[in-house]
Structures are given as structure tokens and as C-alpha cells.
Length: 497
Image 1: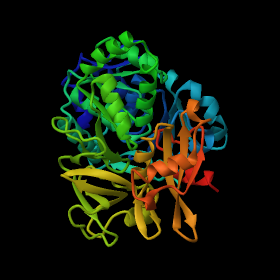
Image 2: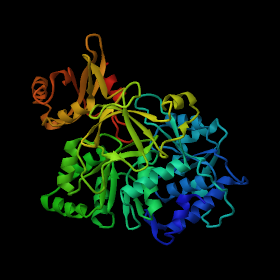
Image 3: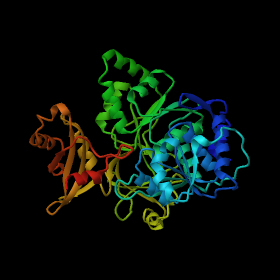
Image 4: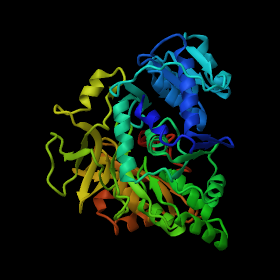
């Protein structure tokens, strides 16, 4: 039996999932996922790593389907429920999925694909609700378990293949480091085709016997209503969600704001990740909620690798320390370890590191060093023992006028300017400079008329070296982002073309 399914036996009648107005126990999850595994298997004894795509709303049905695919011996391929047909087709074609499990509401989206393909379609709503389970295959921990796709912020998305052993390593290090227990209750508001939602929220909760509540659609008022009920003590989100929660809180009357702060102060833990967290947002959230966000660093290929401590100093602007079982080095362009205090590319080793890019052997080889370290492409520096991310090697490190400049550092300074709500800094090709530093800025609506670019330029050189200042600004209504709220820097660059 898979370890994560075996864990359910420890908690049986305890509530595992709250969704669609219902409560489901760990026993329900084990029984119903086992039955669905039999449905998927049909007459086969073992799927033998066949890819099974699924397009199911967040909730009990999602987790049931994920566990069922694993128990049937398949490789789970979660599809984003908000992606357009071409994006979905790309994943289905790339993984060569043999089976898809789909909710009725998404049939219209994928029907054009089904017309021309031989793929077995299982309508989720047609599954007979029973706990009957016949024999299921024995699954080795080294088997492929999951294919998630990279954000595609710098190139075409790649399928990241993780094994059951990888997933167990990713989950257990977080359960230990963040002190998960069966008394925890987490609210899931994250997309479930990314590691943040699947591993950090669902995986950790189900492993530790915690409860997980799902909401059908993202709603700030619903989130605060659930907070106010007093059952939830754990929350994880991306910076854009915290932006929205802060904006809502700032519209409230002082007494209502204070009431919510009292509620949130009782939370055991609040986490932020998947994109850089502006220090100003962390400080504002601390003031409004009484919670100092725990920022961490991870990616699709790793799960989580670095984290601020659960007990100890959580430093704003830093992602913390390597997690147990995860080895980290900072290296130069020759993959030699840099001296202490110097920036370098993060490379990682550990059982948490993925197996391969799906059907891309050359890309897989290229992303590992000769002695097996995974090259993240992210640049960091260690300051007083804590890692600070400076940006992506190819996107956030701008080579201008002979200098290597961190775009994230410039963005942090720009956000301090009283007229700027958000920003994204990139480098664009330039004959004179190599790369010209430019910034797309979202100006606070009521300050757009009075905004003066020269005043901003004069202000920023008082805050940082003049060679780091943007040479051009572009006012935009919003920044281009992907489903996880990450700014797509290549799309920002296109704004300047």
C-alpha cells in the first residue's frame, strides 16, 4: 500500500476534507479512492505508469481522483481547470495520456480534442458511489507518480516527472519542519496543477491527519468568513492573494478590522511562496493580521528546498535555510562553489529532486551537473546564514554596462515609492548597455495624474546606485501573470517592443 494511503489508517473517522458543504473522513477517502482505482483499472491488473489526466474541481473529488490514479499504478497528470483548449491539448499530447477523468462541466472545453483522439474518457459524475474494492497493484516507491508542468515563464512548459519516493521526501520534510499535526486545519485556495497546492497543502495535510477545507471559487469575503469561524489555523497563499486580502481589510471599519486581526493572531502558521514576496507586503500583513509570514523557496522540480524557520527568526526578504534532507550549494558559472558572501546559482541534491523531464532526455541531462546536482537557474546570496534570492539567472539578473544587477532588488526599492502599487523590472537588448534596465509600473489610480517620471528617477538614485536605476518606465494597468501569480517577465519585455 502506498505510504500516503497507509497514513489514512491512522486517522480513519477523523474529518479529512470539507468541500461542497460536506465532510469526508480519511476512511471515506481511502475507500472511495480505492473503488475509483478499480474503475480506472477496468480489466487490467496494473496501469504500469500509464498517464492519467484529470480535470476535477478542487475538493474531495480531486484528492479522491489523485489517490485513485496512484493506487491503480498510473501517473497522475492534473489539468488546470482555467486553461484554454490549446494549453490543455499541449499537456495531453505531450504526456500521451491514455485516460482522462473529467467533471461534466469541462466536457465542452475538451470535446473538440476528444473528437479526433482515441482516449478513454471517464465522466466523474458517472462513477457509482460504492466502497467496494478489489485487489490493487503493489506500487514501488521508485515508480513515476506525477507529471506537473513548469510555468513556462522563460520557454515552453516541460513535464516534471516525480516518483512516489520524491513526493514522500517533499512532504515529510515539510511535515517535520513546519510541525504539522492531526489538530491542524488548512484552507486551500491555491491552483491544484502546481506543487504548492498539491504537496504543501494537500500532501502535508493528508499525511499528518489534518483537515483541509476547499472553496468552490476564490472569494476574499468567503476566506475571511471561514477564518472567522475559528476552525482554520493554517493558511498558505501567493503574494497576489495577500495583496487582495490586504486591499479588502483596508476597506473595513476599524472595529471589523480589529476583530479579524484577533481571529488571525490565533493561527498557528501562515506561509507565502511561489513568487517573490515584497518586504512591504510582509510588513503590512504583519500589522493587519498579527502574523509574520513564513517565506520559503521551492520549484516544480524540487518541492520545497529552503524555508524560514517555523520556530526562530523569519527574516523579511529572505527565504531562510536549507530544509532537512536537502543539500544546497551556491556556484559560479563553472559550477565551482562561490566564496561566502558572494552570489551564485543555487544547485540542489536530495530525495526531493525530480526524476526527469518527460520525454526530454537532453533537457534532463543539461539541467544536472556531472556529479548529480540540479541546476535551479536561480541566483542567491547567503547573508548571516539566510538565503536571499536575487532572481532568475536568465531573467532577473540583468547584465548592463558591465554590471550584474538584480531586478528583484530594484523592484523592492520601486515599491517603496508612494505612487507605485506594483512593478516588474527587466532587461531589454541595447547596443550601448548590453541590456537596458526598464520597468513596467502600476501606478495607484488616484496618483496617476500627478505622477512624474523625472521625480521618480531623481528619487531612486537616492536609494540605490545610479547604474541600477531603470532607464525607461512604462505605465500599465496590470502586470502579466501566470496562474500562480508569478509575473511573466518575457511578456513584460514584449511590452517594451
